[in-house]
Amino acid sequence: MFLRSAMFPTAGAAKATKSLVNRFAQASWPPQAISTLAASGAVSALSGSMTSATLKTLLSISGVGGRVTQLTFRTADATARTIRVKIVVDGTTVCDATSTSITTINEGGVFAGQRSGTTVLILPPIVWNSTIVIEYASSVTETDKITAEYIYNTES
Image (cartoon, rainbow, N blue to C red; front, top):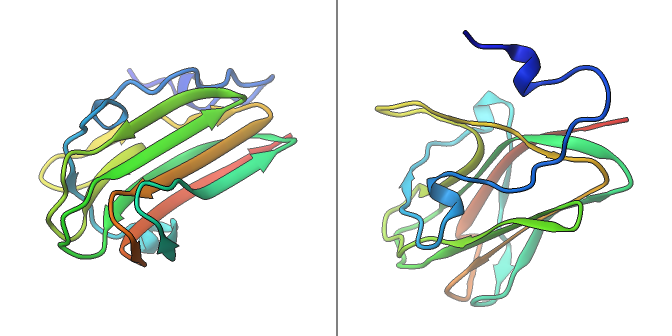
């Protein structure tokens, strides 16, 4: 039986995420096909200019709690690269993992929320109480070749 209150508590302060344990939050995570999520309400952001192996901030929020309910990173072309994702919640690094080589367009990783395809993958939200920082990097210097898609809300 699915208990909504277990995943989305409504009373009191939510407990912050301490670690992510899934196939994408481990070293050398294998990429999967990811379709665009913008139509489902996610914010879609191209990476802009990136320098090889240099972390770029996607999201940095402080002074309020909240939850990331959807977070994916995917490639915008077939150039061989790896993607590193680092997530820090309330001062604790809950994920710092790099993919294996990705050589196919629209492949990447899911860190919160769902991915549909031949199988449906649903991961729990990432919860923070005071600060969250989400960063990512590419193994090559490039512009607009990684797409990040996310949904989050802040809570008082």
